[in-house]
Length: 371
Length: 150
Image (cartoon, rainbow over all chains, first blue to last red):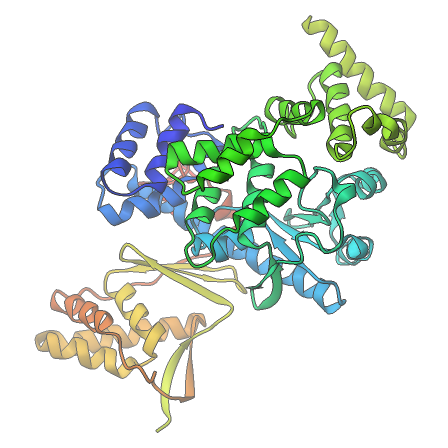
């Protein structure tokens, strides 16, 4: 969840009138612009500038904020152009594509190329086309970030990361979320997808409800840099009057993918702090759900460790276990463990034994040193 | 009737005007441009109507005393935009059916009163510019203007 100063920054970026001005002054009072604007907050500054400039605010940092806006605008345009090339390549090979996260949010929700800075692109293809898509991207000079994990990712994960010679990063997804991906069918998320054009190429984007679902489930996870971007993404998605969120659809996926703790926490926070118009029956329904043991473990891990690289042997073991539970959580708690050995086998497969031992022993030693 | 109009070199050239400043990016060449004051106002007008003659006529009518200077400055500025390839001349063009938006004419007239010749700022090496920390590595104007010691 956002820190106190991030909350003021978010309010200054998202609210209007006096509440916005109060939040802006409070943020300026609390945070030293030269030394205390960490990465997550920096990524909110283009949106903050866009909101502030309409109020003719005079502040010594406004020009630099405008510069941050210009830089985000330039960087995003360059990334969009590169995304267009990838989408074109896949489309010409007959592969259906969908864009996730920053690209569709920029075009459909923020409607501004600067206010939602991006560092990489996320493209999704149906699982049945994933292998061919990977091959095409490799042929085009993209390189897998973790080539020896490809088989494992294809079996148990949702995406693979690529990087090219220009250092551009691309995440190729076949599922949008980690949760229970075994249960996701080819038509899930695609059945309500909406058309979108990226740099002249026709592709698809998640419908508003699925986009909100994805934004919250993906965003509400621990990170060394506190994740805050899910807040403006969600607030703006909920505010859209021309493309309203279908709350029944959101609840359907929330229940099916067993992410009700995430959803309840996020939607209550958005309603209380940013007056997001979340229907009361949705919050009531979420409050009435009794999560199981697996759900609590998955949520606890997301909030405590998230996607960070484990720093101790214990954390690594917990993370491996939760990654397994997360995708098998559709079954009863004990039944869900039946595939654990197979999961561990695939996890270790392809990794040289020497490296496997060295990595784990060094983590174990680190842990001992700490304790 | 077909007229010689100016067109933005889409899709290679993208542009946005914010707070009196227009920023342009040529995605093909990687060049970044900016302009403010009369330059931004003229750009906005041309991007919508493409009609350079109307720009000259409107601004010269408001400031007849400086008409010759205004005409020369506008033509020189447009010449630069053409040379950079961010605009191109379209001989088969027809003006927009909807006519010129009133706010654009108002902006042109306001800029003509105390006319300052438009200036196009050009920045090359986009890869280097993107490496600049927009809080600490820039001067008081902000990115992409680096600090003197950068």
